[in-house]
Length: 315
Image (cartoon, rainbow, N blue to C red):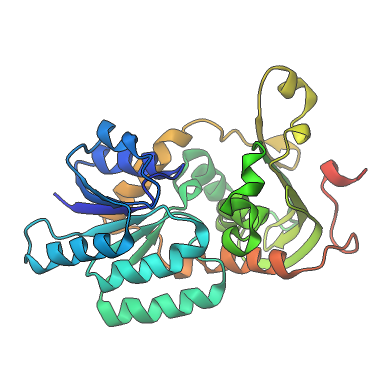
């Protein structure tokens, strides 16, 4: 059995990590969050120690490490706000544990370089949740693309709308310095998926950025991609909105829809199974996606270059 600690226990994604730890037969022994609304822990690990002060959590993890094998932490799962991921991974490695970090791994590519140094110094490893890389439909698509003899590039449209209420822009997620902005916060795993499926990134053009939406054009070794991301419910297609849906995702390849909406609830568990088997996605695996969103964040939007996504052609 492996012993886990968790940083960011009150966050949206933390329950999926708790479920994955439990489903893989391991134990959460300590959790931290400055917010104490963490009753969800009782559904999974009611005996876990909980801390609202990082200093006391740090001391507890260190005490377990010094107990020489008696419930010493093997993995620290990181579900904290994006801008804290770097420091919390450093804490995990220096505490004698491997890290399992939610996306985005970091906000800037140079953070990856620093973490690689700490991996070498400590002998411990950073793993990241790139759940689309273990989604059966995406794995199947990648195999198809890799095995084809086609010379021309595929034409791809990516649309992801995940509506958020007024709270969103008032939280850390609405602060680009903390979240990285829309493209980083809700899009980074899709950009990783595109790289995973279609190969080396060759061009990155930004057409639109705002607090609630972003769009642009990416060209990969095997695809030309028009992408659109939004947290604005009015961007959900009318028919779906009238049916009460607040989320819409679509990927078309040469006009053919790729069905990948099902199975998302199992992907964190699959990711944990791969990590525990020594097949986790590490720091370098993240580099292209992080460089992609870093470039999007720093670019001045322009309608010149690349092709516009249909959602913004009339804006």
